[in-house]
Image 1 (cartoon, rainbow, N blue to C red):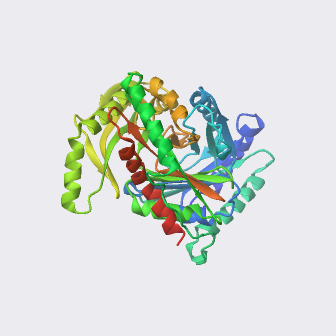
Image 2 (cartoon, one colour):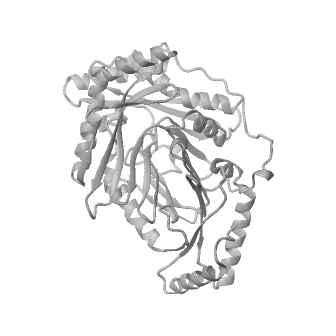
Image 3 (cartoon, rainbow, N blue to C red):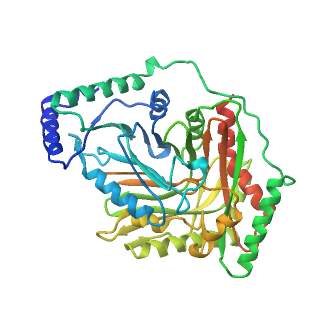
Length: 475
């Protein structure tokens, strides 16, 4: 697979890496090169190491797709300093990697994949394998970026004493990857599916009564002036009679929602966190950052005329525009201390998904020299779209009103590489897939005048992408 790599040049790089390893400055050897284009989700589906780390990330509309698997090293952090600790550990880990590539490309580099929990600590047993912050250096990653497909493979040098041992190890890993990248060898047999039967709780259910109580308490706090907005979420639990295949759900999601980020993060075989989120938290490119305001929503119309009418109503809705402005103001406040310039359009536009449309405003910021990207990420999370406003007033009430642990739901998930480039999305429209059950999550913003019934229906609308994908994958 790596015939495009000059063997003599590779041997010299391995010798240098081993030399630095003996001095204690290097612990890992990483190699990046181009390969023929593959379907990253199919490769992950064929991956044999299902008991270990797996990662998937795709946004079809931007021609970017990533899959990764295996664990060479992992960093973990918890508590209020988890962003700073993860950043420090991540930089230290990257410095221990000797990377070689003849390609000059922003993604021809070792990557760390993972994310953070919504709250400072992750206390639920259902999320125990994820922790409050976790990033993994995988054995391999495949990145499809437009017409270029990059493979990066990483080895731990401990126990490898000479060039031949390193080359042999590389050859072994690449032979395994040749198998999972060869579509001609894929089996037609589908395994692991189960019949899907589930009814969404109605407005006469105990779930709704608890929801109504939470919304009423939240709006009472708003009337008292404690905060302006709080985002409350629901957990929808679905028991399974047999395990399902998470990649089958993702295949449906990526085709149905090409403008969204489809993702999977699996630490081991206990659970996988999957979803299809429309909300980018931050994209890092050299000295600038891209983020966006996404708040205020309405359904899609059944006809073109109805769709246009609903769009117009959303663009002129005082409630939704106020909610959207709160999000934009928070982004501006959180970025201004780190940015030399901020570029924000005067009026929001519309982001249309297959079942819902949102008020949407892109934001671009020129980051000041020396600013840590992880520090920027920390300041952006949680946005008012998933937390509330003012953040320090609203967010502490979330756990008082919700009767479940959010885990990584509505938290930053994504990747960052050795060149400092990265991308993080907000983990909404998502669920935790386990062997015996699925837990889906959806939330909405509670502001003055919010009605429990209407907000309940909004969360039902937001459950549709995951429920539909689950139903499709289990046919």
